[in-house]
Amino acid sequence: MIVVTLTSWIQRINTVKKIIESIMNNTVKPDRLYLNLSKTEFDGIELPKDLVEYFDSDERLIINWVDGENTKSMKKVFPILQYLKDDDIIITADDDIMFPKDLIESRINDFNKYGKKFSVTSNKNLMGLFPKMYIASAVSLYTKKMLNNWNRYVNDEIIKTYNDDRTYLYILWLNGYLNAPCTKYNLKELLREYDLKLNESSMKVHHVHTVASNYDAVANRRLKKMSNLTSLNMKGFFNKKVHDCVLVYEMTGVDSKAMTCGEHLEIEYVIASLKRFCSSWCGRIFVVGSEPPNVIKNDVIHIPCDNPYTHCKDANIIHKLRYACEHIPDLSDDFLMISDDQIVTKESSWEDMTPRIVRMYKEKNEAWWNKNRKIDFWHECLYQTMKLFPKDTCCFWEPHIWSPMNKYKFIEMCNKYDYAHNIGCISQSLYYNYVNQKPVRNFDHTHLLDGNAYRVLSKLNVSNVCRHLSWADRAFSRPEFRHLLNTIVGFPEGNKPVVKPKPKKEISRIKSLRDDIANGNVIKVSVNGGFIWKRIK
Image 1 (cartoon, one colour):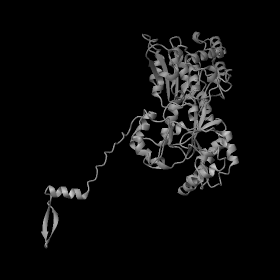
Image 2 (image 1 turned 180 degrees about the vertical axis):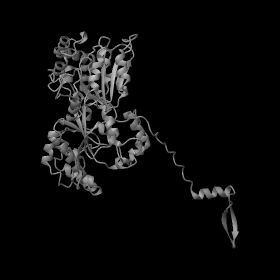
Image 3 (image 1 turned 60 degrees about the vertical axis):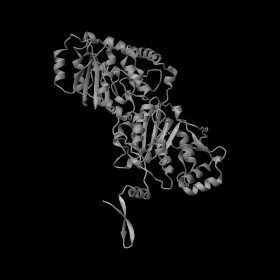
Image 4 (image 1 turned 90 degrees about the horizontal axis):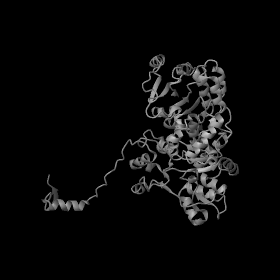
């Protein structure tokens, strides 16, 4: 849904209909238009009759009366967020700048062109503090989810700056989104097109041009003030790093079944965990491989990729990661490799993703390796991987947690090792041993194997769950585990966990027979010189 939202005040309420008509006459029309007005400001004042009749004539037009103190321009977006879904497109408008007929179409085209990751602004002039960021003014476009956690950053002092465009932009940056330039209609172009038409006293051209020319200075002062108010270091903020996530995905295991285990797929918990606990640094989420389920398509970018290898599962994992590194031009240098059966359970920084080791290669002798290589192919692949590196420094790296990687080093590794034809390899251990990652042990992690799921789950709850949590299919199929996941990521509870009663201890047949004899339910009956035991009906 495309939503245009704006606000107005007493001095402009008589001319705002012109602006709204220019919006509704666009080649691409909005599904909703909200005019947010302050109840306090308009108390006892009648709206212009032609404006009321215009809104009554079209169900897409909504006057949204905002309670409480008049927050001026800051009531343009925040009051309507409760009515929108995460993927709804928000276009902000000013009440003193009319829309050219193809403005919305142009903004939508830019939004799709840049991969739906950016806010699209109407001004191409650089702000001067960070070369990839642009001033947001007059008309901006983004989705509701780009403003996630806005109330974490916006307090009363921020509201009273009344700098709405800068505030939205600031929240977008904090959520990891950068701006894209516009191909048409920057602020000065809009003013040139309409400066002869908007000549009412409240819209004098010289006034608008004065605001536009001073916008850089005003915005920078406000931004610095907002940074201080939110206890953020300016230098740290502008050096804030965003890390993309790459999820290697194949429709196997639980997710491949027509009937899922409960209300949500495994991959839904992964996306919810990233959005809830990693929003301070998480950029885009790429799903490389199978097409992702519809339920998460608005949160991810799908990169189709095949499975060319049959000799080793991890060879296909490496193939997909390499494809992402080489075919996503603006993939962040340091990205996070994630899987669909692993989450974090609490607020986590990028540093919390530090890879950890399970053990050193030298800790197990050849007899142990030979024994386990015969048991399963996974140990054979791990053995072949670790043989590539010096025994004293080589480690087995934990594969059941999200793993940070550098795209340039990953491509170097792929060019050096013949993962496509060797007996087998383990992707994380191959990469971290190649880059000489410093070994770190002892970390906050629980992995629910098929065998230990019941025992671990009987003691696991929200208060003692580890930061890194991973699971096998059988663990995910347990209702009590999905109930725990729902609570962690904040999903509304659908199916309550079913607690199965403990099975009664089986009574031995001999003891049962003795009890029946003692109670007279079974008697001795003579038959042909002998006897049998007969149950009385």
